[in-house]
Structure formats: structure tokens, C-alpha cells
Length: 322
Ligand SMILES: C[S@@+](CC[C@H](N)C(=O)[O-])C[C@H]1O[C@@H](n2cnc3c(N)ncnc32)[C@H](O)[C@@H]1O
Image (cartoon, rainbow, N blue to C red; front, side, top):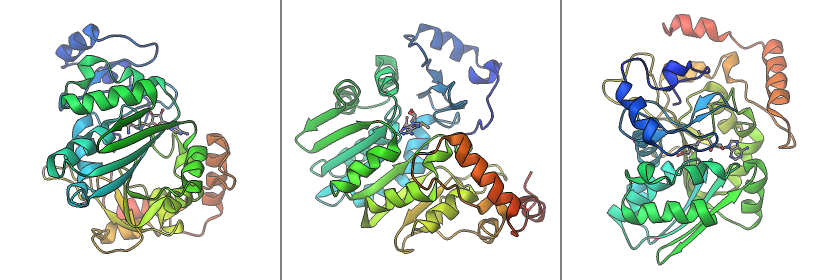
């Protein structure tokens, strides 16, 4: 989950008033025109997007988020026991989900043959992410892979064939579908639905579904009802990512896992199921996979206004959600 949904103040973006050491450290980091590394609570870095008004990762820990909400949620360590694995990293960004996956695969089955595609619109993000200070959280072989991907958009090793497809994921996913790529695991990590609705629509999820193997699995940090209903409309079964121990009461889920069969998914709680009966569950639509964010949001707003579904505020009151 991205914890700053609204554009944070400059103070918050530096990690809060009590984190002067963070600011001092960041001052030593190399500067990119728009990407300034910010320390998260587990010692890994994230960026802030001025365009989308959001951080790229949870401020509670960027690396932790990659491991928990993507690698563990998709049971990658178990899936990597196979001789071969195909991964699709939707919104590659700094490459943390890819790096966390490759780290896990190297630990459990170094002989696994991995084919990986990352979808990313902005080549400057992976390039900024290979500054030496940002890479130290990964092993030297994974660092070298991230460097190759950032510089050449592809990388070949004895057990790895990886490619970043640059461009709007709504188009690049169609190329993948047409070439018959079927992922065993999809990491789905765009900016939040309100900020980047074009990647959370029924139509885009349908394209992702067409690129998923029959026993494949998708994980996302989003627990939004509109995301879950879009996944259902695109033909997925869905489960929850339960909160970790010590989670605060409002952290009732850490995201969503989707697959074509319900086996192995952790069922939604009654509260989460009821969420899907409210207006919050009206999914985003983008009939031709080409609308601007504003048009998708306006269409969604109109559908919500016409809907006979229960209001989300009554659901919040009933389950005492702030
Ligand atoms: C939340 S960040 C992803 C973080 C990333 N998974 C990581 O581990 O660092 C979202 C990413 O989506 C990219 N993005 C935004 N719109 C996109 C689009 N239409 N197609 C592809 N990528 C897009 C942004 O450039 C950004 O890198």
C-alpha cells in the first residue's frame, strides 16, 4: 500500500521532522533532474513522483514492501522450485519487485530459468535507481542485472532473459499478448487508482489476464474495492493479503492476490466482501485502452452517481473504519 495518498508536504516527503539523519544522507546522494532518493523505514530508498503526487513505495519500507506484498504474496519461493518461471513486472520503476524476485529465486533454485518482462513508461526511473547507494541492498549479481536493464533495457544471463518494454503499459501489454507470453507471476504495481486510473481498469486487467498462465498468480498492494471488482470483471478469483502482526486496526488488508482458480487464495473477510457491495466497488473503465486519466475518472464518477449500490460511508460506519 502506498501510504501517502494525497500529496505530502515537503516535511513529510523528507520523512518527518525527527528524521534529520535521513535528510543528511539524502544530501550526499547523486541528484537526478526529477528523482531524489528518500529513505524509507527499512533503510531502502524510494522516489516521489511530482506527476502522480505519490511516493513509489510504502514509506514503511520499500524493500519490505517488495518482499511481502509481491514476492511472498505470490508464493514465489514455492513456484521457483520449477525448472522455469516467467515473470511480468507491471510498472518496473526502480526494479525493486524484480530484484526481490531474482534474489528469492537465486536462494531457492539458482538453476531456475527465468524469463522476465518489465513494463515501464519512464526510462529515467530505472536509470536513476542504479546509483551505487541505492543498489547496495541487493547482491552484486542482482545489482549487475538492474544496471543492464536500466542501461540497455535487456539483460541475458545463463539462467535469465529479461527485458524492459518502454511505453504505456496499455500498449506494451498488447505486444506481449500477441507474442504469446504467459506469465506464471505478475507483480502489479502502478501508482494508486485515483492517481493512475488507466492501469486499474477492467480492460487493462483483461489484457493482463490474457498474459497469465492458467495456474499463474497476480499480486498488488491495492485493497480498493474498485480494483477488486475490476479483477473479478476481468475473470479473476481474488484473495486478500492479510496484514502482518502489529498492523494498525485500519490496515485490514495489505493488498490483493488474483488467479483463475480460488485454490490457495486467502478468502476476503466478511468486511472486505461487504465492501464489494458498495459504490466503492464500481470499477474503472477504459473501453479502448486509450483514455486520459481525467476521462476515466469522470466516467467513474458518473457511474457512481447513478448507482443504486449502498454508500461506502455506511459500510465504513458499520465496520468502524475511520
Ligand atoms: C509505484 S511506481 C512502481 C514501483 C516499482 N514497482 C518498484 O519496485 O520500484 C509506478 C511506476 O509506474 C510507471 N508508470 C506510470 N504510468 C505508466 C504507464 N501508463 N505505463 C507504464 N508504466 C507507467 C511510473 O513511471 C513508475 O515507475
